[in-house]
Image 1 (cartoon, rainbow, N blue to C red):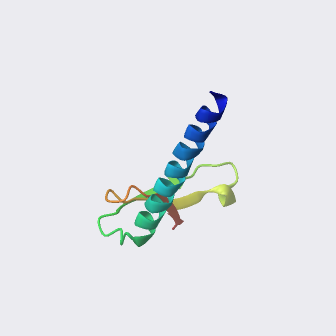
Image 2 (cartoon, rainbow, N blue to C red):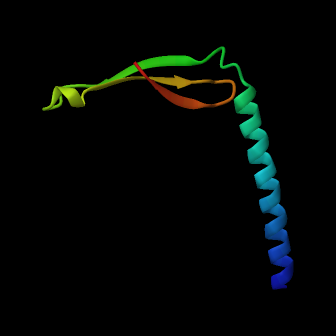
Length: 70
């Protein structure tokens, strides 16, 4: 019984890895044409050099979220 469960787990894990790789390929090939950009910032710190400004990006097509510095 234990061996059957192990084989089934390994089978499902292989399918999950294949699906994850397919999703990575999809996200990498997406042009992110409809991506939204939201400017963000963290200001008012005691030390002004710790203030930070960045953009949050989200692509509704492929689901990718990422940030870029301003």
